[in-house]
Amino acid sequence: MLQYPNKHSLAQLGPLSARSYRILKYAVLAVGLMTMTAMTVPNFHARSWTLLDIILWCCLGFFFCELAVKFWVGAESGRGPRYLVSVDGLIDILAVLPIPIALLAGVHPETAWLLASLWLLKPTAAIPGLALLGRVISIEARALTSVLAIFLIILLLAAVALHVVEGAAQPKQFGTLPRSLWWAVTTLTTTGYGDAVPETLLGRTIAGLVMICGLGVFGLLTGILATGFAAEQRRRDFIRNWDLVTEVPFLRDLDAPAVIELTRMLRRIDLPERSVVVRRGRPGDCMYFIASGEVEVKLEPRPIRLGSGAFFGEMALLDNSPRTATVTTTAPTTLLALEVADFRTFTAQHPTLAQAFEQEAARRKTAIKGDVPGGKTVG
Ligand code: CMP
Image (tube, rainbow, N blue to C red; front, side, top):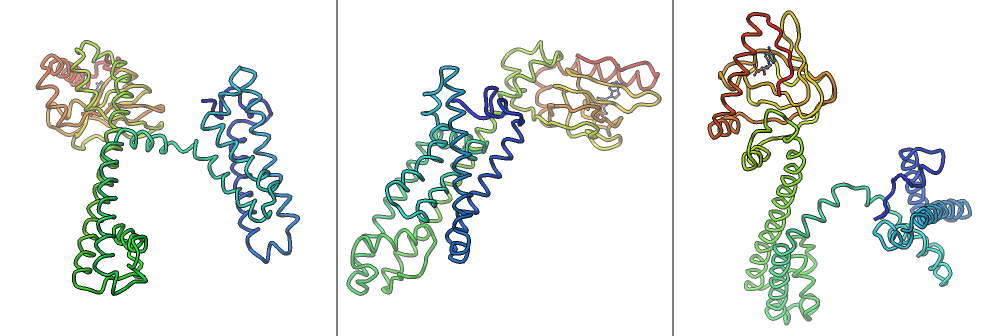
């Protein structure tokens, strides 16, 4: 999919940077939508129709230029038609074509310009959570379809039941199945507008059951989506952590199953410069591997720097003692944290690794006591 921004994009062709272009685009979008809204207010509409019209045409012109340039750039690399059928391309087309088509078809301008609301689709491609949501929905499609089927079954059964039970007493609300269906939708979704209320005891009993079913169905939906999100996030973290774990020299000798196990246990932490990771005297709850960046261990008389591939925070876990030093990042740093419970489980299963941690901790202790330079990067 040809996506903005990319190296061939509009922003790189002109003097604007990709970021300024994006800001300009969102500003045009905001102005366009506000103008569209103002157009529906009779006061504004009557006084400044021409101005509002000009602003909207300018916004439309901007989006048309964007579409044309993207197509032209795509065509140069032989991907023009592909861009037009990509999600990005279709959204760009939807932003520019419907309004002139509606105007040409004789739709009243005030109504035609309401199609400017389609411009709102433009930022959707940039919302990172949407791709994640799409993936979760596609993975959980079977479970979600089952819940949807349950929802529809309960909906229809409830509508039929209320039509039979209440239809004669309240023909306006329950006299036909579509009317009963409206009641079933508002009740099952627990919205309950109160415009249709069963009067008989049986009707009310059914209504109560439908409300309870509604809560159950939405609970199920929420549960499926929440666990889907968590599982997908874990999968993504696993892939990201795997690459980082293989970069740590200390862990290179581990066999594949052990790396998989450890990767599942590690939590990635991205820190800016000058962040305190552990403080001297505090209890230890984690040890850390440095995936990239650098930290400084504040030791007297000389602090020690540990770089990419090193680890720290193991001493407090091994001895069940407070932290021996404060450790701070000296550059933007990515750490992989191993919680104490996982540390104990993993070292119990891999005694050679436990031994290596102990040897390094012992060497570090000697370095602290004897003021022997201990600042080599462990790896
Ligand atoms: P911990 O005591 O849990 O927290 C502070 C960490 O600093 C400590 O574990 C070690 O990982 C690290 N550290 C302490 N002394 C040294 C040293 N001499 N060389 C390198 N790292 C050290």
